[in-house]
Length: 401
Image 1 (cartoon, rainbow, N blue to C red):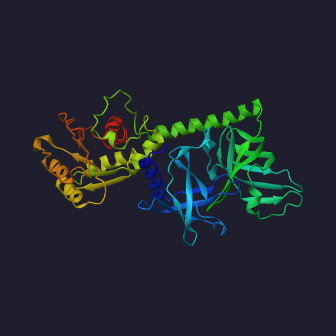
Image 2: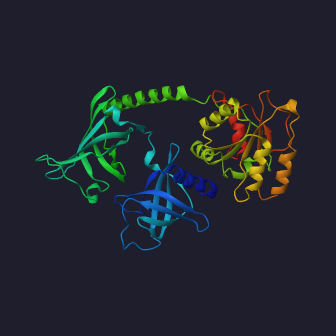
Image 3: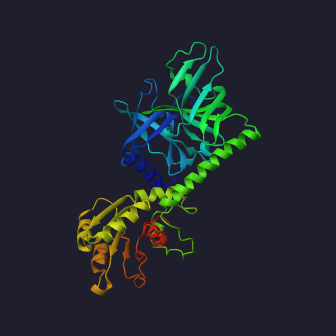
């Protein structure tokens, strides 16, 4: 994916959520550097990444790196170029020109929490050998991840503090045990180190299973089936309601969907969720319980950047004074019996000219208003968390469809 808008949205998501992610020299098999995005310089096309340990002094400028990060449930890899040091443990990298789905998560992974007490013990094949142990972090049919709490020598059980070279990719673990899985007290297998990540919570190792037999796969599938049922049951209690899958007529060329949607197909669900988190909404409603209800429905659907104004006039005044950012999606409560007028909205649009678009969603307790010929001015159903019929229309106005 090379859409610069979505790439910038992904970077802003990393910045706003303060997420840690690995970055490594392209093609290297050493332990990645754990990074956190501190600043985005769009003018220079640079990212400022804070690392938890320094890069080598001999590292040359223009060295190629890889970032690995998540957008929703999807993992992405993105190339970037080292541009120099900005401060203590703070380095400059180029904004990635593209991001591609990572093949490291071809099999669905299920997270485990420390309170579940699932525990991993592995032993390497060296002499005298080492035993590593710690709580299970996630599990799939292809492998697992666990946090390293303890490393001991096998012969005398003395605890050791391993160096970074201890966790070389491809290291074999001929003995691997997972204890206290649901309905499976002990699971035995073999593993190979796929990756290691050093973060603020310690070192996380990712292991791939080696040659599972049919009965072992069956045991593991039973555990993951239980996790899937638990996940669906949990999602059922917090669902935003069914999505409207009925076909909709395509937007006109000047409609909002033409503004942001990437070329070449429908926006993947993970990127749509990212788009909602990044989309800015101005909610113009009186400060009453109805506004709280609508605000909560928007946040439950993934729209996190919601600002409020008590009246449409107040919202238009705020938007008119803001000349340096793109216009938000304006959501306005209307009361047809009060003679609602869009004159103020049209006047502000004229003032913006071609520099900004101002999409507007009109909502009313009395139901949908008369259709408008303006593709950026739409009446949508009242937003409710339990009924998502309004959501595809709002996505379309926000340019996310």
